[in-house]
Image (cartoon, rainbow, N blue to C red; front, side, top):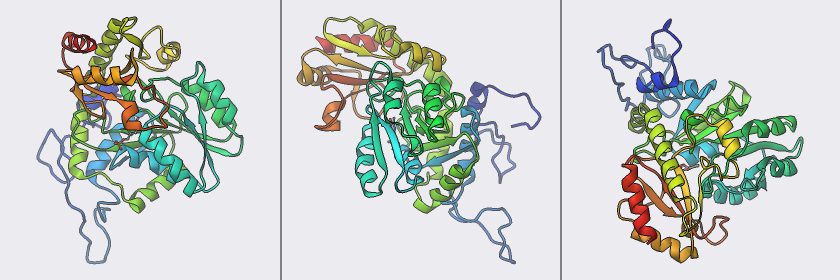
Length: 387
Ligand SMILES: *Cc1c(COP(=O)(O)O)cnc(C)c1O
């Protein structure tokens, strides 16, 4: 980045991969960054570290490029990359103290919810759930936030797999009055479509595995904090302690993927909206869940706090229950049956069968990750599969 250049938009920063001509260490004029596989760094004769680097678990030049870019586009003070989205999310929960309470949404990333239930009990972190699928999730949240006791309010918006939307500014107002921080899993929205820190959130988390990388070939996670505060210091201390760091090659791939994030999100959002509108009201369906639809109960909040689109994730509820939904998924020819989302290829998943017996997810729900294929091909595939 040129030091005194103009303040650039996120699109420009992303397109240039953060803007470095040459990574530290090589004045070769390379336009794309280097990969730094070294695990360790040289010491001088007096025992000091002339390059201020010791060991790659504590820091790698490759992390810093991605982190600077992410902190910038999220409007935060600092960012940290992790070896997975789960490692990033758990870093926040592991920074709490025994006896703290956390408010969690009913609909959220299933593996995190399930994992926290057992983990919270072992480490004496109290979990209080609010119904984020209700007409007004803020009213639900207000009933469980306890002043002086709730330390963290966790939000996922849009929430997997109902794509319910929570009013982040209203949740922040409520949480901060009670002395709680707000963490937002913004994986489905990405920093292109929503900036939680501008809405008052303290921490933003991404499964960078999904849209940030965008090519279904890297597992990675990210945290961005609004401030360089004590909580950030605790997170920074913890990362090398727990050791869930990102590999240098994965880091490089993530930065490469992020260059096209704005154009991908525009296309994902446009195609998802076209598909949602096409199948909304279809007699073969119970309903279409997508926050971009006027009929979505949280559409007005989504329209207010998201910009440039509603994302590429939607769910179809199929008439006839679990069996009918599974049969539709089985008949898809173009759209791949697989977990995860956010890649260039469209994926479908019957969530209830992967989430198990105590899931709140409707059994007739098929989750769709709308990829970058021709939208007419995608509509044709879904149409023939519905039979
Ligand atoms: C995938 C996902 C995670 C977990 O990320 P991993 O990289 O798979 O560990 C967390 N939250 C959401 C919303 C996700 O979709």
